[in-house]
Amino acid sequence: MTTIPPLVHVTGVELIGEHDLRLTFEDGTVGDVSFGDDEWTGVFEPLRDPARFAKVHIEGGTIVWPEDGLDMAPEPLYAEAKRRQVAQQL
Image 1 (cartoon, rainbow, N blue to C red):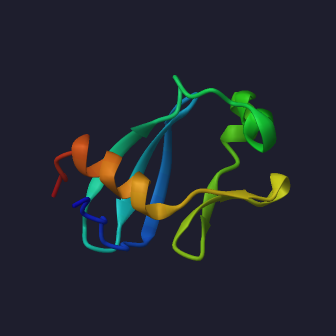
Image 2 (cartoon, rainbow, N blue to C red):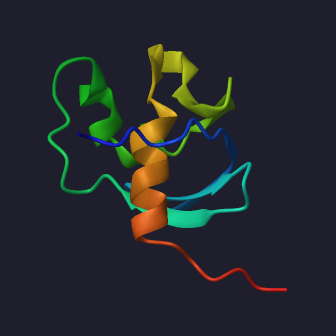
């Protein structure tokens, strides 16, 4: 049986590369999510442009690009951030 990741809202986003984000979640998890290897096709094709990708921000607990009418589900973002978790600095 597949385990469904918990619904944890994104509370912070930082651009750390052309198509790389550091995300913070409401449970304190901080991790990096890379989109560099993704196939930017269909509605996501405009995000190939790093300047457009950089316009990311948070809305409704996830990352969005409202200019393009795009958002991403927080569950897979959280799973990837947990996999590539960053130690928090005090």
